[in-house]
Amino acid sequence: MTEFLKHLNISKKIKDFDIAVLTLSQQRNLARIIGVFLDNAREASYISNDKMMGLEVYLIKNDELKIIISNTFDNKIDIKKMGKEAFSTKGKGRGHGLMLVNYILESNRIFTVDTDINGKVYSQSLSVKIKNK
View 1 (cartoon, rainbow, N blue to C red):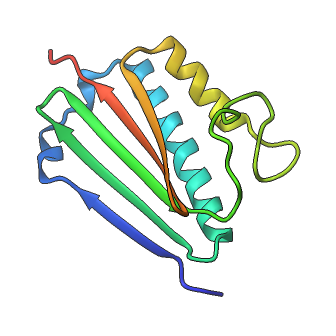
View 2 (cartoon, rainbow, N blue to C red):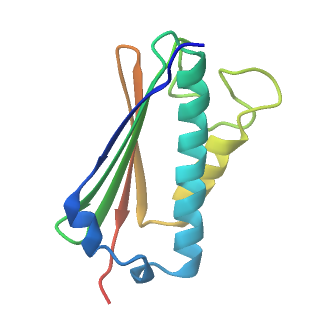
């Protein structure tokens, strides 16, 4: 088995972030989104030829948490179809994770997601707007 490469970059400013500024519901939704993105990235990078995955976490101006999860992939991706019910590049009976993320995004305006493809690298950038107590 080829070695699975990981890249990790966590800003030193993140130590200033207090998760308690988010409600319990927002914390759960943040965990759900990150879980879906990490699971998808792990699976896609594992079956790709390059097998790379990255995680970056930043605190921007003390009012925005940014989490970027990137991975290599080999499938053809149609970004417009992603998050639709039962759509998956990985086969039948799949595709519920990004649908859940879209539901969370629609009902929680503090979260925004940007998706980017650059060559064979797929990135999901999650921004969390923070209201300081």
